[in-house]
Image 1: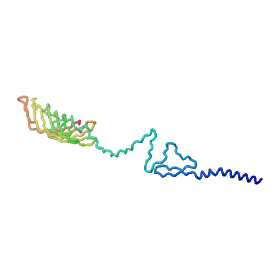
Image 2: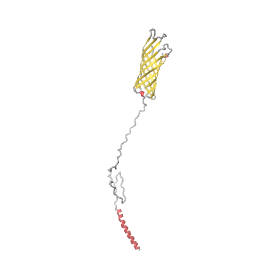
Image 3: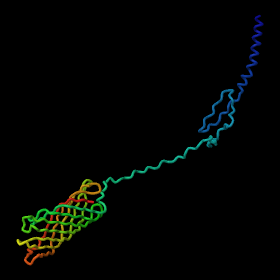
Length: 282
């Protein structure tokens, strides 16, 4: 019985060895995958386990391109190449701006300055006069931003005091001057100053005697002095005040009476006027 068991076991071992031996030999003699050369920029092929299919799927490239040659593979349908790279624009420094406050509109182009105020006689004859009226204007143009050349016309009505014997007097001075001005100041205030030189005409009438006979006076001469003013900007105009000091020197004068019995008395003497006026600078 023991011999029979040994015989069966030996036969079973031989049978199993005959079945398993070809598989082991075939596994030992299976070809190994050939390592591919290393190409920069491409992943390396991994070794497949035994029994894994070695063929690539249809349409797959069978070999990597040679080193130094990019793959010639067509892009998939619907693929659009990215836009070409455009270098950013070079830096341009910001422009510098003038921080100087802009000049008011009335400090450019034409100069027009109307004014109205009062006058007063200065000097030795001032005691016989009270305040009179003074009005007129300047018209000219700017030459640069700080200088203007202007012509000026003015009219002064003198007012003798009522205590004089010639209380009915009326005296008028019409004047035409060349009045250049210098303009300066700050954005909130404007100052003007300048000389004046011109000519004037004088006319007057008075009753110089107790009988009521009247005499008429006339004359002309040269006028000279200066002008100064200050203005507050209000939009496109400036509102302010003017001060004038003007001397009137007669070059000739005349007197005539309205009757044979009237007397003229003395000719008019030189007159110096001080004027204060409200003005617009346009």
